[in-house]
Picture 1 (cartoon, helix red, strand yellow):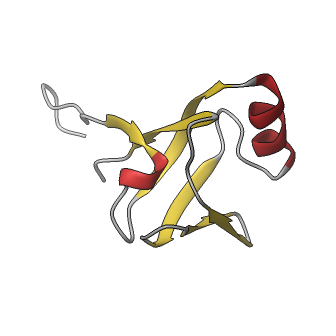
Picture 2 (cartoon, helix red, strand yellow; picture 1 turned 135 degrees about the horizontal axis):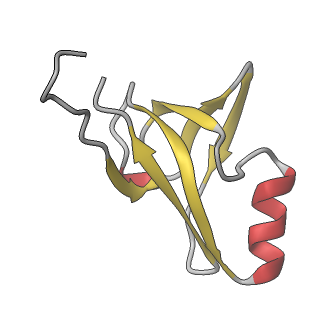
Picture 3 (cartoon, rainbow, N blue to C red; picture 1 turned 180 degrees about the vertical axis):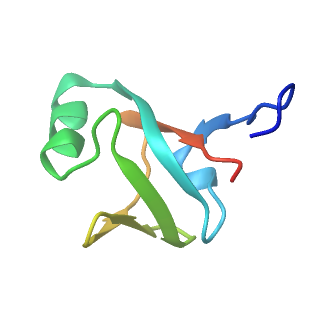
Length: 84
């Protein structure tokens, strides 16, 4: 990267990512049982994901797996979207 330039990433709720966007799970917050379940299915801090299809539910790629995610009030998944 040229000197003086930096990547600016933004942090958004998972369900607000656009189709094709890639990012990393930044944080998961909510009811402990909901947070635990999300971690069990592969959504945990530091994991790289890609938005396959938007909507409710949306479909995200986590490695070679596809997950259907329907956001609710019990937990929020925050994604640091890459600007690349």
